[in-house]
Length: 124
Image (cartoon, rainbow, N blue to C red; front, side, top):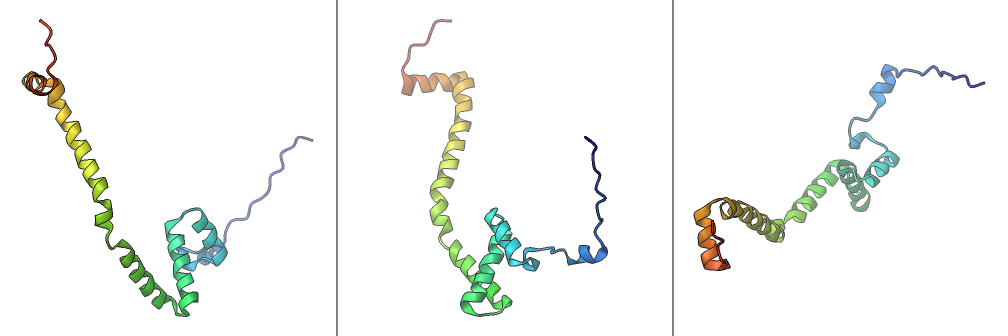
């Protein structure tokens, strides 16, 4: 009674393959909401476009234009808000590259020790 039951699986027909949505624009609302909940960016974009359609009572093309305007406005000032992160990256990379001669180049190590560290150098 531990027999494995094999189920004959149906293969998709050409009609089924043609009916498959190829982009988020072609999906039904339930599938789209599910993908959006899974943090799929394209699905979230499409949900927002459909929301614009309902809210503004416009067709899809007009909703896409409104979405493009909102997306452009959303990116304004992005440079100003990301400058601290970019400065931090540049400083960190500069420190990383500066540490190489401060560890491996004797003259640089000696100079840095003499000016900033002022530790006694052990005899050779």
